[in-house]
Length: 215
Image 1 (spheres, helix red, strand yellow):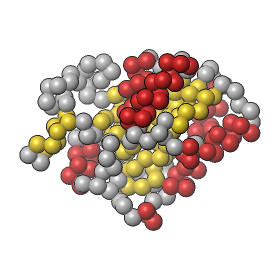
Image 2: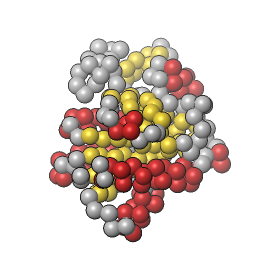
Image 3: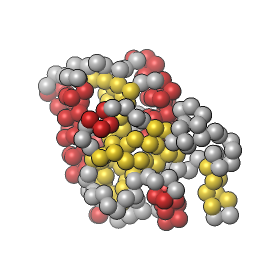
Image 4: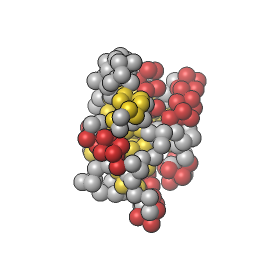
């Protein structure tokens, strides 16, 4: 198997990169996409078209929308949403689906979501959640409640939807793995737990990489 491992920043993958180098593990390409959906879409598409990997694994930290999920927990994403693609009208956010500019079931969309239904989701043993991807980190409570209640999103990132969209279009199997570093809307960085979230993420990441390569 040829595995493409990607993240928006190197710091999110550093322990896993060091493990791969130390153990001389073959069959894993590392891609640092840059932050945000635009950068991720470009770099990921270029890499997939050039290398045609068998599997893409995206990893990173994320903000948590679900207060029942503890910080530093590592999760997998099944369904992705784009949270800010639409228009704010009369204090109500309307998506491209609401505006009838995009069909909810026009490939790769399924019921308005970018869904990953491969067997590896459940076989990892990690909790499976829905997510929302944004261009602007959320601080407005109205928008946060919309993501939680209308989109059923448990976590927020800036790159997840790009992975789902590109991989579905290119018909490449993929997983999105996230560790929760902070609650969405909390701007006091002293309450964030980035170091522990990265450590937990990479512990699970190494386990799953070894499992995938030995499958």
